[in-house]
Amino acid sequence: MKKFHICFYIIVFFISACSDFKGNEDDVEASLSSTPSSNSNTTNTSYKNLNAVTFGNNTFIAVGRNGVMRSSSDNGSTWDNVTSGTTRELKEVAFGNNTFVSVGQRGTIRYSEDNGSSWNAGTWSGNSNLYGIAFGNDTFVALNSNFIRSTDNGSNWETKSTANLSDLAFGNSTFISCGASGTIYLSTDNGSGWSTSNSGTTNSLNDITFGGNQFFSVGNGGTIVKSADNGSSWNSVTVPAEHSTTTFNSIIYGNNKFLVIGRNAVLVSSDNGSTFPEKENTLTFNDVTYGNGLFVAVGNNEIIYTSTDGDTWTKVHP
Image (tube, rainbow, N blue to C red; front, top):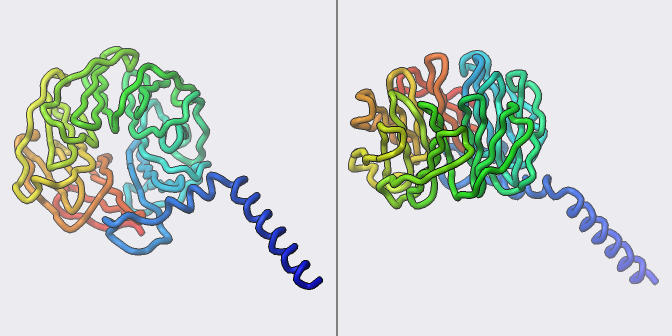
């Protein structure tokens, strides 16, 4: 009889545990993705990895794994925790029309019209991961397996075409996206139609930016390519020999400089992108932005650094 009772309670416990697992898919998914990757700058596992950062309305917003969000309204000195309303990973964030929009795992779209204080869910019929987003001409465009766009500040989204891309930027009335195997797509009609361009590389391109009347894209294998004709043609940029195999994660333009970040790499160009000398080789960042005279870079375990010139960096979080 005693053995029967023990078996009964074990069965009840097992059923209860399985039921709870199934009913909390997002929470379980979040817990499984919380382990920092091997290129972390710290080892504190209580912090989540930050994937992206942007600037708007005197506010910096950083986003990352498990729906983590951080905001700063004092020019990067202090960073507050923000409730994003999701536990899914957020891959990228952009600003336009007084609105922040963040996209990520399984079609997640979150938008804020009050400088990041509160966030609402955008409506899209798809559920594939979204990796990049940009704003231009009153339009937000996001992408990965689809080009999708919103003309109502991130509230509603429509699918325009399909691709396999990682990031996009806007400049000179043109959206340009980049991705695997050096893929480049262009759109001059606010994201409705897209055409391809030859980047001149087969390396994956991870990020793209616009500045100094040029587009620059960076990626694997120490790749930096640039276009001065709105993406029609591309030329490679020579990088220091020690970074010929480096994975570059992001590039930004600010203070008349182009700044490239990646694995143990910070490169800064002060000659409109002709050369990119190394400025730092001990820090690994996932993304970088510029605002109010300040470069802000984010990485794993919620590290956030700031710099006024790209040469000297100060850790401000955690």
